[in-house]
Figure 1 (cartoon, rainbow, N blue to C red):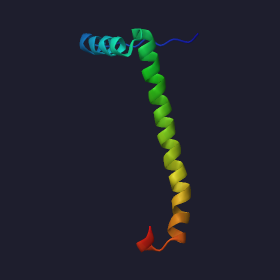
Figure 2: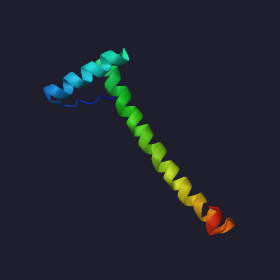
Figure 3: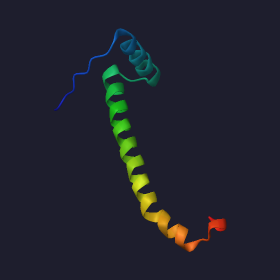
Figure 4: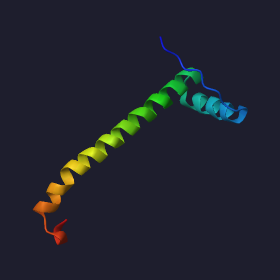
Length: 68
């Protein structure tokens, strides 16, 4: 299985351990989940921006400026 080796400062590692503990997960699982969730969030936002760019010109054409 592919793996990733990431370096952190002691302060960063302490914060990550605290967050993992609060989430009830191991540090490894927490780091995995955060990285994957961020990648998914960015993909969602990029998709939403593309969909808005596709749809909004039609909205402007159907509704006068005062009704948008």
